Image (cartoon, rainbow, N blue to C red):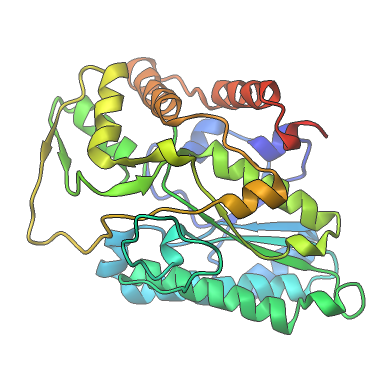
Length: 338
């Protein structure tokens, strides 16, 4: 939606939307949508050849921790081999100038440190999802060194490659299972209490528009040929965005009093880290990237989106983007000045 407002010719490549409802259908965007699997190397290559993209944003993934325990092979094949296929298709393309590969903050070897992880910290992963994202980062770095090397940029190749690691995002339109906002609305719609599986887990919460602003800013730099930005980047919230799951739900109750919850202790609960923070000083200093909305505003925007949809079927995504852009302009953020 944001790319369309910028006048981009958008080509989407994805599996069919996995939920009903889903945000893609709700937005009803006028773009070319190709239904396909990133593990289908031949089909993916054919799409690149037909549509001749200049910039590639790679967000396709098996992105759920619980699902990665249930089907680790699918998680690894999608998140690793799928990434290989996209990078190879970009390498074979005569038109691709920039690739932004979005992985996850869970790509780091989590030591439960109280300070944030920097882009230079060790990659790893306890669970299959986290490990697959650590591997995707290694693959990205391999392609950057072997095929998109900065020293030969403009000579033997024309493509700049960067990777991005974002914290937990919330915002209207996410209907996937094991997502906090979706679990809230499901419980409210059924007049039930929401079950909190890991209430004291600290996460880097941010509105989905925050990392997207970083991805777009970084993509612009790469497309302009600024090769010093072809690296790994963290895009996370300011310190106030690091909150427990319980704190987020308490904030949500302010905007939708019907929300009720209870703690759920299950022996079948898969492993999840209790503490995970990102250090985004690199993006702040070098890209001059800043967040726009603080944690209370993020929760407010998210909960009111779902409440408006639940009570009246209204999809407020365009309004949220308008408000976000207006607030960013007021703050005079660098990406609003172009």
